[in-house]
Amino acid sequence: MATKHELKIELHHGDLPDGLDLGDTVAVDCEMMGLRPVRDRLCLVQLSAGDGTCHLVKFKPDEFDAPNLKKLLGDRNVTKIFHFARGDVAVLLAYLDVLTAPIYCTKIASKLVRTFTPHHNLKTLCKDFLDVDISKQQTCTDWGGDELTPEQLEYAAVDVLYLHEIKARLEDMLAREGRTEMAQSCFEFLPTRAVLDLGGWEDEDIFAH
Image (cartoon, rainbow, N blue to C red; front, side, top):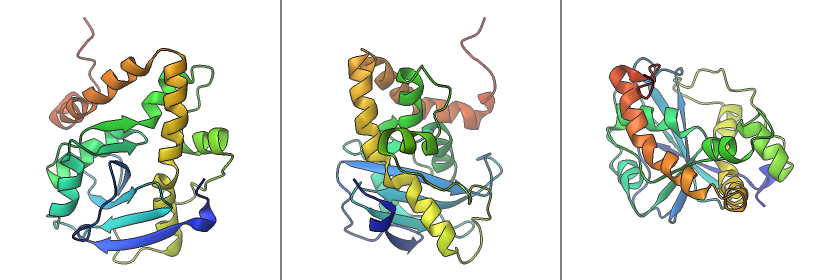
């Protein structure tokens, strides 16, 4: 199991480097100026192959070309693991103009199978599954500055460091409870959910009467 002591951070500006191969399952997370994609710009995208190395892509305002990152996010042969994919997929669509797929969302998986608890945040899953305590002290911080602090970089990296291991544990539980197909159907709907959110239906239940 990767621990905080094994964490390696590689910071990139504007895009992933050419030729980087992160395998067929990549953990992804985003940091923004706030929680509303139509208002709050994308500042940072974090990625990890689950090997203890986290690649952070930092963006300047209005510079979102990132062809290598876009190719990876849209690659149908690479599963992207998120925790609360709905928000990240929407902001990636808004700023990088790419509809991310296929997706695995650990928060949705947890809600579907860990019905014995109301706690499904990343900190709780790391503690319950891996006995790892992660810090969330940098949750409310300015991600848009020219330079990020070491504390910000570590916080961002840790958000993707453990997602492969959490996914494996949740997959076992979903299979045990017969909810794998249900989870997969939810994951497949997430790109459409992001389009609805950006289109103005973020709070309206279109399935209601």
